[in-house]
Length: 67
Image (cartoon, rainbow, N blue to C red; front, side, top):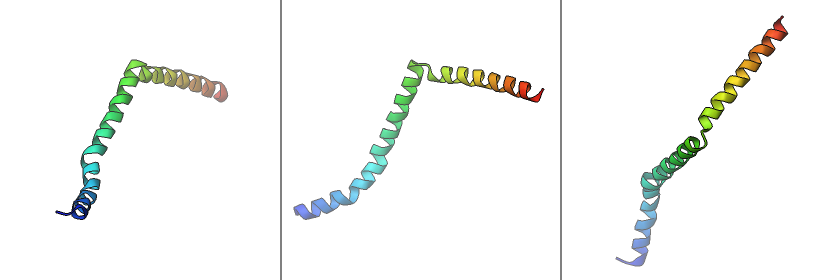
C-alpha cells in the first residue's frame, strides 16, 4: 500500500468517523456541562422565580389598565 492510497483511505473515512463518533460525544459533553452549570448555580430555579415575578407584574399591570 502506497502512502497515496493510505491518504485516500483516511480522507474518505474521516468525515464518517467525525460524524459517527466525535460529533455525538461533543454534543453530549456540551449538554453535560450545561446541566452541571445549571445545577451548580441553580439557573432553572432562578428563571422560574423571575418568570413568576414577571407574570405577577404583568397581571397587575393588565388589571390596572383594564379598570
